[in-house]
Image (tube, rainbow, N blue to C red; front, side, top):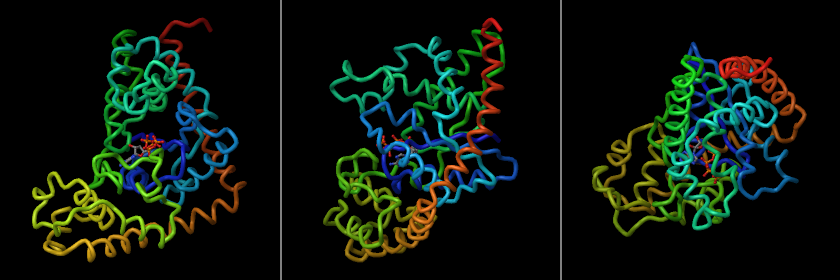
Length: 332
Ligand code: AQP
């Protein structure tokens, strides 16, 4: 198995990023036959407004979060997307065979561009082509992501198939999504119908991996629920988006099913459930936050890890890029 995934240094990682993706990265790293590449996706992060002064530090922080979350740099390559230039080069080649109509159907573009799609940058529109290049350049077989990235991953498969058919080759591999666990789509604590997101203007909408115990408890206390107590079955949570979200988060943190959570809490009120959920979240996140802070105190160590990861990624990606260029008939 060759694994590739990434996170954007757009802000602090949150519980959705951890439960939906990062935790699965660690599981895949521990598979006996896996070779893992985990990137800080800084080229994706600049597709919307960002702070150039803070980008390098945000990049280190995301790398620190990977390690604090359990990615072991001795087992997996952690690298920076912009340092491995073959990603952008392959993106251009793939963009020539990606139909605009397909990109127009991408829901993330519609969500992020909003009503102003005409004014959105080409980078935001072409984001899924860069994502396809990120994956295909490693010939990745599996891509661990949250539910929200499923459509982009389908497009990556589609682009790989288009390339292979057009050039009568088997150079590119169609990657399989790896979307598993109880929390493949963690919702906002303030609005259970919206995804928990780094870019949500409300801090209260998400639990950051950098939040302390007090902040986590306060955010969970204020999280959206409803006046009804916890039901007996998962089916009864339908339409109760805030309640469903908290039960889902609890299940994911405790690594049990939602049904098991309800067996324990059926008939109980939120006044009892929320503190238990907060304890669970703190128990999981506190050691990671501590480790992250330690790592952030030693930026040179993080840089050393990234330089080693970049080098490994560079070697592999140059090989695929050369193959693709030869297949496409470029002069050499
Ligand atoms: N709410 C979520 N639930 C489960 N998984 C999630 N992911 C993101 N949000 C959730 C997964 O985390 C990985 C990294 O995502 P990203 O950094 O590429 O950005 P994103 O998907 O656009 O996530 P955000 O947090 O909402 O960032 P912004 O606000 O910057 O766009 C991906 O595997 C994603 O599926």
